[in-house]
Image (cartoon, rainbow, N blue to C red; front, side):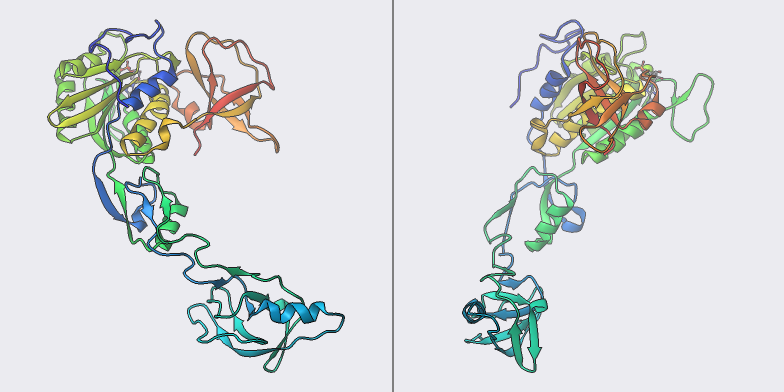
Length: 435
Ligand code: AMP
Ligand code: MG
C-alpha cells in the first residue's frame, strides 16, 4: 500500500507534478497511500460506539429470531386443518378448539394437535405443531372455538428462527464506521461492548502573527483565528480526536516548539493552517523540513487551496502525517473536506475511503465560465425542483476568504481543469457539504 516518497525537501511541485501542481485525485491517492495500519483497539459500550470504526468483524453469537415467532396478533394454526374444508365449498365451516395462549415473553407450553389452535400475539413463540398464523381480523370466536373466515397460506405471518441472522454469521465487517442501525444489530446480537479502533489523534496548529483566539480583545492589524475550530469540527466529524496546539507566530522557533508539542501529544497527524504560501513570512514548510519532515508534495492544481503540503515526520515516537493547509479560511476548509477528512477516516481504520466517490451528478442552474488548468471548487447552492438531479447555482463571490459564503453554501460545484464554458441545464458534479 505504501508508495515511496519523492526526494524529501523537494522545492516547489514534487516529482511528476505539472507546474500548476498535482491533481486533486492524485493528491488524495498519495495521502491515503501513506496511511499506516491503524493503531490501537479498545472496547467501548455500544451506547458510545456509534460513529466509531469497528476493529474486528462482528460475529453473531446467537440466532435471531431464536425461535419461530409470530409477526401478527391472531391464532396459531395448522394450515392443513383449514385449507381443505374452507376450500371445499360455500358455507363450509371449520371450528378449531382454542387450547391456550402464547404471548411475547410467555410461550405456550405444549403441542398443537389436529383441529386445535392457540391464541398468539406479535413477538410470541409459535407453538410446536403450528405452522401458520391466522390474523385475528380473519377469525370469529365462539366460546372456546375459533372459526376461520379465510384460508391463510401455509407459513403466513411466521418469522422463522434465524431469518435475520444465525450464530456464526459475520454481521459487520471490520473497518466500517458504525451507524445507528449497526448499533441496533450489535445489540440484537447480544454485544454490550464492541471492539473499535482508537480515535486518531489530530494535532491542530494555527500559524500567523495576526491571530488571536475567539473571545479575546483584538489589537491593531489582528484578526480572530477561525481555522482551528472549523478544522477541529471536521476532525471530530471524521471520527478523530482534535488536539488544540494553539497559535504559533510566524517565527521558526515558534513553529519548531509547536511541532515538538505535536510529537509530545503522540499525534497521528499534525494539521497546520497558514504560512504555506510563498510570502516572506510563510515558514511552515521550512520549519517542518528542519524538524525532519519527508515532503510528499506541496501544491495542488486546485482552487481554492493550491499551496497544500503533505508529508510525514517519522521518528522513534512514531509516524506522524503532516497536512499543511492554506490560511485562507475557505481554502483551509475545502482542503480539509477533500484531504483531511479522508485522512482522518483512514487513520481511524475505515476501509471505504479508498474507493469512495465523494462527488455526485447535478445540473447547472446558471451558466459558468471556462476554467483554467486548476480544478475549481465553487461555493454553490443546490436545490431540487421536485424531480431529477439537484440544480446548482454557484455564488457570484468566490474569494477564498469568504467564510459567510461557505457557510451559506450547501455544496461545492466542481469545475474540472480546462473545462469549457457551460450553460444552464448542462450536467456537472457537486460535493455536498450539508451533511
Ligand atoms: P497565510 O497562508 O498565512 O498567508 O494566510 C492567508 C490568509 O488567511 C491571511 O489573510 C491570514 O490572515 C488568514 N488566516 C491564516 N490563518 C488563519 C486562521 N487560523 N483563521 C483565520 N484566518 C487565517
Ligand atoms: Mg500567515
